[in-house]
Amino acid sequence: MLNLENKMTTRHHPFIQGHSIKRPPLFDGTNYALWKIKMKIFIQSQNVDVWRVISQGPHVITRPESEWNESDSKKVQLNSQAIHYLFCAVNSSLFKFICKCSSAKEMWEKLQGMYEETEEVRKSRIYMLNSQYESFRMEEGEGVEEMFGRFETIVYELEFLGKCFSEGVKLKDLVFIVEGQSSGFERNWEAKYNFV
Picture 1 (cartoon, helix red, strand yellow):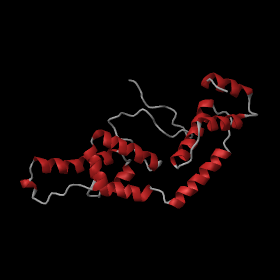
Picture 2: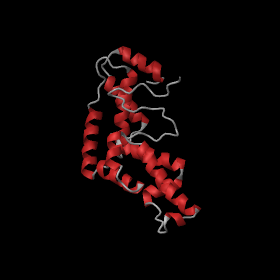
Picture 3: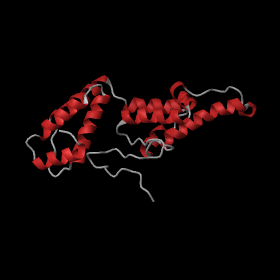
Picture 4: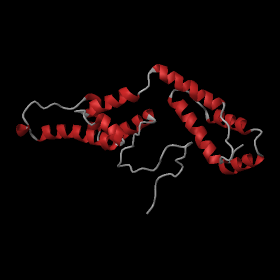
């Protein structure tokens, strides 16, 4: 059987890639900002009306269920679909955190309240990531791909928080980082990425 998951899920490259386009991205309590973007797009790709139920709230039908027409049933079903997507997208501890919510909107807002960063936390993360970027070094025994993956993760998070990098700046900084390290690294890098 073909395994579509990328095996580079090490301590330096925590993202599992290659999931089914029919399965929502899993949120385990880390990388909320990334999960939020992926989840919104996933839900919109399945049914835009389901996303509206999450962002605006469920349709409330005031008539007894025995008097619902087909349109009423479809409106209520949208909230159930949204709840189902969210249940399937969180691990078991987060499931316990949101399972008592009565609507998908309430679930989404509860997760947002718990994991979305305040401006103070955001600034702190930018400071920490800038520090990691500026002090970035290839680790002992680390391969080029693993080192590049760590570097790209830091850059991606900084870009997500609003810092812009051109490809030229990233390349210049990477060359500066490895300057003085083994010439074997430079040969491997040039062969792998066809530049320098």
